[in-house]
Length: 156
Ligand SMILES: [Zn+2]
Ligand SMILES: [Zn+2]
Image (tube, rainbow, N blue to C red; front, side):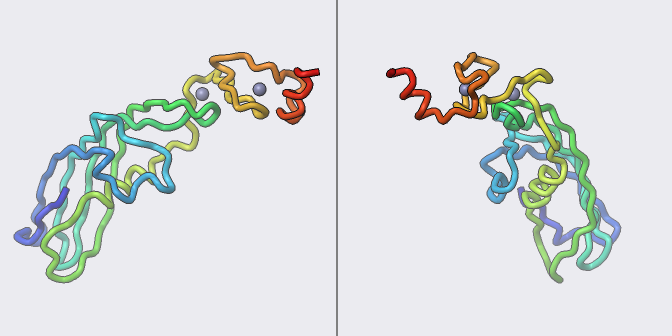
């Protein structure tokens, strides 16, 4: 999403509203685990020209972001409403501002510390990696046995 600020006068505010999708977020996802769901995110806000190369950017981002569960990695949707406000500097004579880096920054700084699919999520077995919410693996008390040894034991 590109905003044209060429004709914006000092102290003038431009309002915008657009929807961004996961595929629009090119630099996003490398050091970040969340992904926008198929409906994307609604970004609604304003940009105010403060001076020749200075703007005040404000928006609210609303959407469902899917994070991996911190224990079992199951994709877990989280309804999210994030506020963003920052003063940005541009090069003199800048005609347009690309909103994508600001949306990415907003998603990044608001990333929840820990998302769980369920408060009682049992997580993954540290030995065999089985999702303990879905199956009961046979590691049990012998969880520190090498899985290769376990396979051998079954043959005996
Ligand atoms: Zn989980
Ligand atoms: Zn196991």
